[in-house]
Length: 256
Image (cartoon, rainbow, N blue to C red; front, side, top):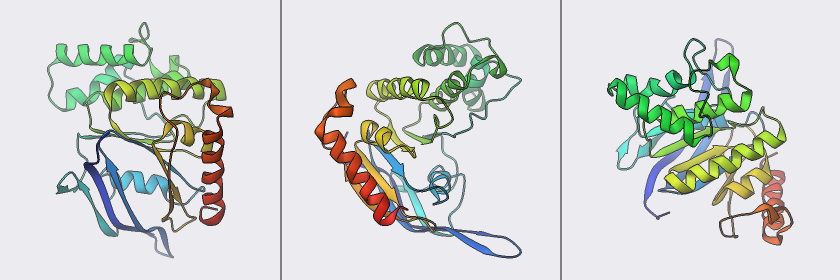
């Protein structure tokens, strides 16, 4: 990790307007992501976490404020930013290999090159042998692996994850978290991951950002004090327990 900023949000606020009312999802959110770090974002349901990720991905224009990717304002989706949502959003008529290959096809990459890249990514996420399976033939955990591989296909610098494993059982979720850490350690992408699980945040992240209830704003930033790699003994490690307590305290004081 370096101290060089790669993605910055400044004074972000967002309002959803209908014919009857205005709902402010975010107010005055400012954050900086540095190259190669792993950051987790926690906060109560409905505090605007997904809205913030969509803005950071260039999928939603904020009502106020701006996002900068390196030294340029972010005006829309950018191939340097990949995103994985809670729902995998795979195309049901395409196989796992074809789903992962899709971003490369849209970028005009040649067929054989795209196929090789997609195959390598499926192997990295442990899905060798399932290249020609359709989403309906895969478990929920396997579908999310395909979605993660697809997000990595265009080799983004930044990976935004919106609770990608939230609907999975605890054992599958823990295994996929371990896989995610292995991928991050190998690729050193800049990662911002939304989660409701404070233990997950404390284990995965270099630092944890805590949001308030709606309209969401950042109320705390907690540095993770213990080094990597973080093994199975983490659950009883004093620094881990203290970090979990600090996150819970921040949530209680400003995050619901």
